[in-house]
Image 1 (cartoon, helix red, strand yellow):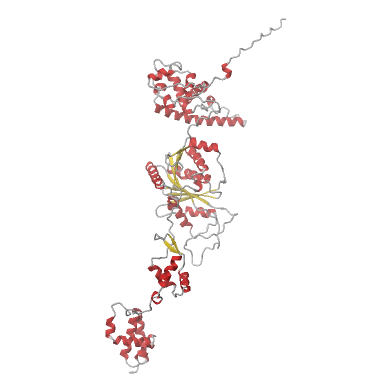
Image 2: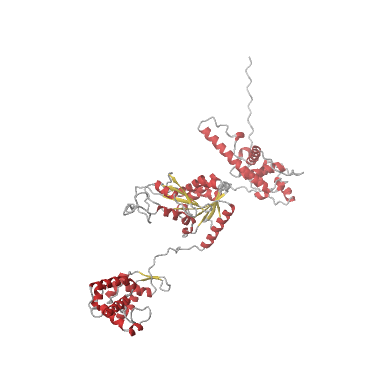
Length: 602
């Protein structure tokens, strides 16, 4: 039967519909079945209509007529068992062993553990195998390596380097301090410096939505410009309020700049958000501008504590664990996301990008520019360092270099060291002198009143300095700025907190200044001056302390005082090494009197 052109067109349309739904074997058998139906000339007609070769159609016609061959294949199989090209390792014996030896030469890592890797790429491995007489492609190499447990992986930044033995204990300490401050309603901030940037058309990682074909053009190389400015962002994350604050400076990432950022946060946001705060907890790392060994950092925080009246508590993450600091996960990562694929042409662009940082979790950020100059290389004198340790710093018993506090009011100055060859007079301990039998007051009330005297003393000292500066510059308007003389009541041996016991020893027991000076280890004039100054401060403040009535028979001399103290159970011993009497008072010179000449008589 002759096959016309119309029949071939109908077959072509039928084949176009069925081809996407058949695999190779099904397509071949289907073409053979159509050729068998057409009879003589069917193979050539089907080949022309389908585009397949006549050999393929003839093979399909033979398979379509063999019922046993069709039933022998399992369901879902398109080839008989053993069909297809044999694998390279079967055609080339020894290929697998040679590949294992090649990978062993380029393997790195601990051979005992499972953490190993190869330094050769797939193409390099295939090239090395061809040099050794084996022909295999990179795909074959990849299949064999996967069978041996290899996979293509990146690096995971999880190693911390050298770990401190108290690392986990410090983490628990930080969590406890943060929880305690949050429970008391005190501010907790996490601080750190972000990566420095240089403004200009410099490339940044990430992608951003822009009109098609309007890509931001930046420099091909990001070499640093020695003559350009550098942006130094220092961030502060308020953990409880979920608020960020970034101070962007252009001078230098120094400790003074970091403390200035905290001062600016306190002025702009902290004082408004926490108006009744008495302390500030600062969580930071162990390096950078807030380095744990930086003396300038402690000096600037001490000044900030005095200015704000806050007890600034610093707790640090151990070395090598700064990535656990909250600010990196809660603030800096989102700032980086805001800056992505966006060149920072000016400092204002950087500040605007930081201020636009928001998250679905409610994070908002404030960005300010710090145009102040913070020179590098500032040195803190040893005297100031000693003063910080003695009066301003309160170190914890557990790693005081990580956990310490800056006091809002410095402690009393330590006693000066005696000169060589001069023995310092001893003094009675304060806990003995504060006994109610000697002062007539409760010890707790006495200490509270002494703290009030410390505040009054500081105010009077400032007034005296103010008046002194006015006299020095020749202005007569401030000469009487300090009433009642204004002389401070502290001395090198007697602090302000010792003046109230001196006053009470005189008022309750009626002790003379010589006996009080023996108890305090000072000169007689110093004891009398301090007692009078304390009385003047109490009068100015209009404070009348609650005191007990004086004893019926008080001691009148230093010799009677130990017996009186023993009767009340006070272990009192008057020191013997007193200040010597000045030479001008020890020997009195008899004044030489000369007779006054008589006036001449008229």
